[in-house]
Image (cartoon, rainbow, N blue to C red; front, side, top):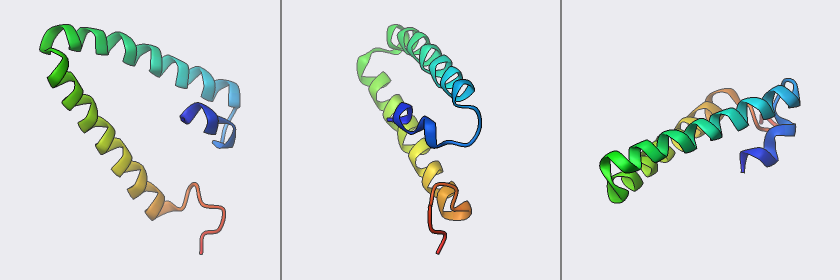
Length: 73
């Protein structure tokens, strides 16, 4: 979903795309090692936990800075 929102993020769209792609590639490589090391069930729980923390962090950041809101009121 982030790739659809890249054009709305501040900064150079090409640098944003490069950083997004780099982080996805790194995530795919690391997830393979984690999957091999701890198994499918624990990997799923770990990834779900990271996603939840990331989502809550985004909500907190938005509520304190109004970064993504068009209308800060």
